[in-house]
Length: 388
Image 1: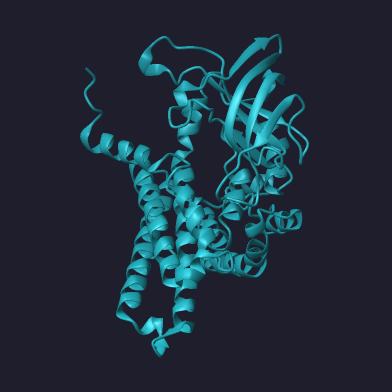
Image 2: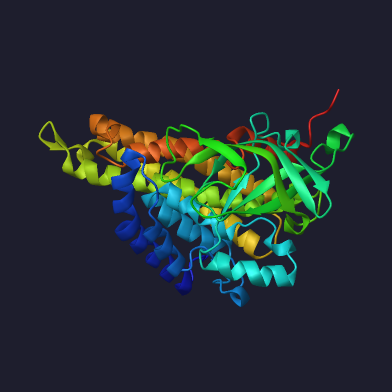
């Protein structure tokens, strides 16, 4: 099937040029010193409309779909995955479809312009894949809710203009319905600092540099009830509806990382001479590169299929789990193979391959671990396991 229309080819080419000319030099300079994505690069991304790819044209967005979103994400991630992830801080605003028209008209144009970017506070020290175990509480006090609890893995908590906080407003005694009672709140804040009354510290990571990932403590933070996203108690269902596109986005990032590593490995293999010839002449290297390229393309085509299903309104939660699993596992393997081709040079920060390798490892963890994806897929094929 011909996925790539003329418009999509143009979008892809424009994103590729931006990634290679604007993002890659910044990544190569800042990632080794754990520097942060510069504000001027964020403004350039906003000018290109990258924060409003899937935002309706009525609100100043590009009005495109998951396909175009993932095309851009792959290209940006080929240069720096953190930048490929940053576009989700606009496009993946949870609950935008549930807002009132008045609220949407106020918020979404700012999102599309890159003036209102978000962070997401859902995970906790004891709640990762087990979202139903969230213990942060939000207690109603008149027209406000008071939020108390701890969050973990909140990337961009300081740089964002708002944080979407998932907190428990109710408890369902049915053990199979523990995810009921979770509510999403939009907590607006000044860009460049944590919300007033929220304390936190950056988590020391081995990769995903360019921005900080935070551990946060909410100590009686007040949020107006009018800032609930969606329905009170229905955050889990709202989050689940967006997982197909989120997992396709992670697949795109994984593919971008793998492609960057492949392209760098090809260039190095042509230049590096051993035993009187380029290492690209050795069959071991040639076959490794052939396998890498094949695996990347296979994942890309599955991603295109999933994006097409999303954009045409077809259910594809199983396929989305498949592509997220397949692409992230592929990405770690391919980036590791690329590092091996570079040998000792690959194990230095002089080359970007080590960055792709470190970041690829994360794709197997966030947006649902590989094990969670396998559970989703196997439950679809076999039914849920018997409970004794």
